[in-house]
Structures are given as C-alpha cells and as structure tokens.
Amino acid sequence: LKELGIELPEPDTAAEQLKEEKQRMGQQLRRTDRAVMRAELVSQQKSKDLQDLQKKVETAETKVVLQEAEHAVLKKNYEVLLSQCRNAARELEMCQGKYEVLMMQLRDTERQRAEDKATLAGQHSHEKERIVKYLRDVDETLG
Image 1 (tube, rainbow, N blue to C red):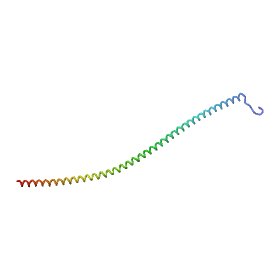
Image 2 (cartoon, rainbow, N blue to C red; image 1 turned 180 degrees about the vertical axis):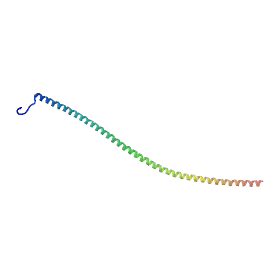
Image 3 (spheres, rainbow, N blue to C red; image 1 turned 30 degrees about the horizontal axis):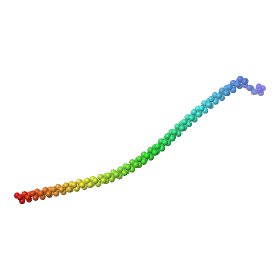
Image 4 (cartoon, helix red, strand yellow; image 1 turned 90 degrees about the horizontal axis):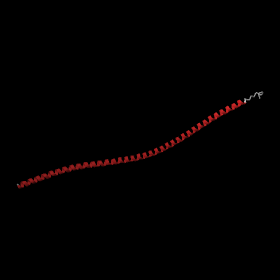
C-alpha cells in the first residue's frame, strides 16, 4: 500500500479519530436534543397563548352580545319615555286650555258678582228711600 501511495493511519490514531468523531456526534446529538426540547417548549407556550387568545376573543364576543342587548333595552326604554313625554305634553296642553277656560269663567263670575252686588246696592238704596218716605208719610199723618 505504501508503494501505491496510500497511507493508512496508525491504528491508535484511527481509534482516536473515531473516538473524537463519536464525541463530536454525541455533542451534536445533545445540542439537537436541546434544540428540539426548546422548540417543544416554545410550541407548548404558543399553543397556550393561542388558547388564551381564543378565550379572550370568546369573552369579547360575549361582551359585545351583552352590550348589543343592553343597547336594545336602552333604546326601547328611550322610545317608551319619549312616547310618555309626548303624551304628557299633549295632556299639559289640554290642561292649559282647561285652565284658560276656567280663568275666563272665573272672571265672568266675578264680573257678574260685581254687577249683582251693584244691582243689590241700588235696590237696597231704593228700598231704603221708599221706607224713609213711608215713615215720613206716617209721621205726617199722625202728627
């Protein structure tokens, strides 16, 4: 073999090279195992993060549904209150009209009362004059 130019390493050297190669491969395998474990941990964390996000989305969707329901109730309450306000405004207008009619009747009644009082005062004065005249006539007749 030496004549052909092929040199074989010494058996001790070859065994040592194999041992070093085995150590390098063992180290590479350990590094690969650690990288796989880290990747699995990252994958588990990402999976947990995804589940957390899904829960948050579900919670947010539930909140949106509840807010929409609350909005619908508030809108209905607003419509009811608005209708009640309109009815109250119409009733107030009717009451104002009734009040104005009653005030006119009160003024008419007071005016009529004043006229009646004046008429009665005039009648009383006329009756008084008649009685005084009658009493004079009686005095003159008697006396």
